Image 1 (cartoon, rainbow, N blue to C red):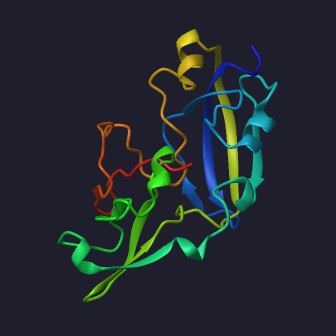
Image 2: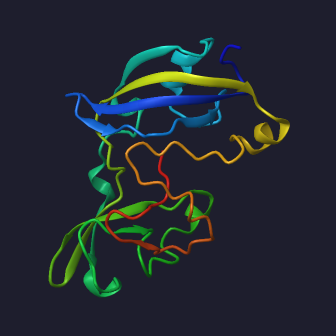
Length: 195
């Protein structure tokens, strides 16, 4: 079977930066629904389209093809009093606490995940960029399995039990309850998926 629209692909991958420093090399394969469902980056889908089990390749994605350019406007300085204690560099927040009503047109979008990058006596520096924004990334991929997607998987636009592609981010698959804006993730703990 070849990879085509509405096939479920099991893909082993290794993610490195442009200097070949390993960013991520998971033990288990990533499984995604092929065919423009945002299960992976479009350039990777194009590379894999029409390939068979066993196909192996390396590809480089420029920032615009991956997580975008670094946007300095996504840096925020907020009063420390808006945040719970203890507060540490590396903690992550979905949105900013007490930010209600500021961007009411954001309801259709996923709220940004902000990472605490600096903590001072009265202020906190937050960065809303993906940790891999602005970086050229190299992927090594190996196709382990291909199967036809079920009607339900096509309707849900992801494989059954599938997890979104989280490159470079901790996995939050065990944390699927409705999370209010301002949710906190301590350093190294699961955080919401960004892609």
